[in-house]
Length: 235
Length: 202
Image 1 (cartoon, rainbow over the protein chains, first blue to last red):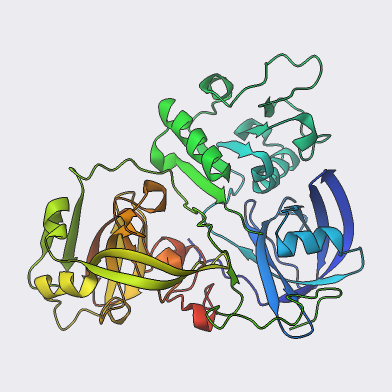
Image 2 (cartoon, rainbow over the protein chains, first blue to last red; image 1 turned 180 degrees about the horizontal axis):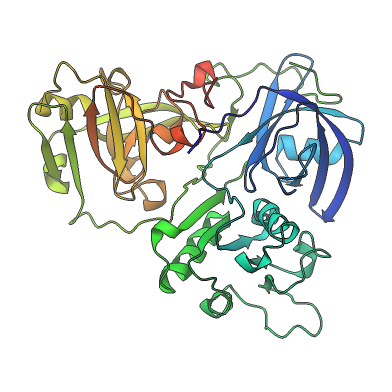
């Protein structure tokens, strides 16, 4: 396998800011040096103050690979997150940001193998890139995305998600006329969406990732077929 | 570097000199970042091996490795995802002690650290000798939690923390660099935080 090498730092222009939820916004960034990414990869965003102080954080790309002139990153605003709160509170379209990427050669899906995508909350972002790739290339049969969120207000990409290739699990509050009562992700949520010979991609908080991987193990998934990306408090 | 419009940073506050470039102080948090599912390792079944280019390959059980004597580290750790954590303490055994028992051959120049999960990471021999690396089982005086690599992990605190393999199972000495898990997945071969060696090509 080729060693993926991220390019140097480059300037990206903020083209559009889309509100996803109360706490999350998607930033569409026009790259000055576009390069094709794999679904699941991330970019680093670096902020620089006048005194030379810098702060950088990694954000997963939500947009699919073929749309690589612009990339979309969805950022959750963390209360004490110096980068995420700046992006949310200060950045407006037309601003320029330094970015570097795409990065990551492990938590990627190349679009031609069966994949079960399991997201907890904001962990949906890199998996959305995979789902979008599958849909655009007419290979929805290869993937199924299960996303677990607290309530309808916490669901990213809510208008775009519905389809036979997605399942939404609400843990606390559910929409009206929703069949499944609110509750933690369980084996039953996964059993009916198992994709033959799939690799599982799990993304979310550490607690969620551990829970989801133990469910998968219980359903007979070998450890070697489970790829995990955990979100720490990345600020 | 280009100044970001409106970004005040720390408002002129001096930067902590313990922070390598591009890092921030995460305070009391310790994020868990792992690419695999967390294994369940029992100390009764645990072992640690040193092999490859050594005169005396060795394998220690949990009790045996504790009997080698204890060595501690107190200082800072740095994760490539940009957090640093100051003044933490770990205890275990120095890699120097393990190598004194196994006697590296003159041709040995690199090691691959491998885990019970299959994770690997590559290091030069010079980066794990002379008091720079440990196999640790205690964090702040308590058993290392499984999420952080317990019962024992490698600790190489002068390099980015992916080099400090969780759930470490052994070291294999080689006469060449054999890139490990993150090294073949785009991250730097050495990973010195002070040189900001994050990715291949840095």
